[in-house]
Image (cartoon, rainbow, N blue to C red):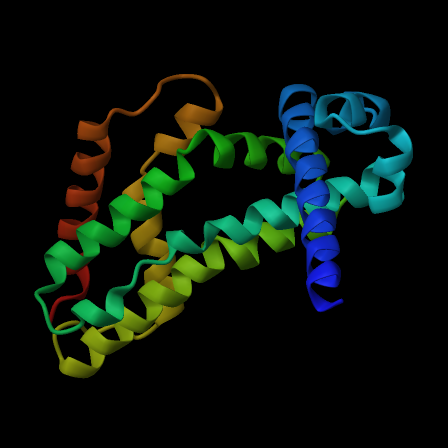
Length: 207
């Protein structure tokens, strides 16, 4: 009996993920306003009845999809604790590159554009992205900067502000130009931006 229950649960979760995969494609390709439950059902390969069994309406499906995508962003927070006693330069370079490359992934770019267009109607979506992506990255970096501060390597009066400054230095116009379709950054540009950001940041806060 237990095996049957587990199999049913797994089947339901599999079907739910199938629907989310279809919805992702439709929303990414068409945006929220132009997407329809009928098109989502067709893309997902399910009937409209099945779709409505899982999601009450397009709004609830959209919110669920964005929250699901946000849950995949935890890798933006680098595992800095295991490198806490190493020199700061390579660690900060790793953190900056990992964060910036994550932001430039096609899924993250499409997600950002959709939520930016719809955040007035769904403010919780922007808040979910902040909690599941940038906030995690800031917490990870903030812990590492606090460690450097305690060791006397850096003197940082405001850890939260310093984390914002570091990520802003790493970006330095890359994401703005990308979102406005001005230019696509190369790997060499990302490495150069982050390396320069680390130099400027450490020069500003080093004891």
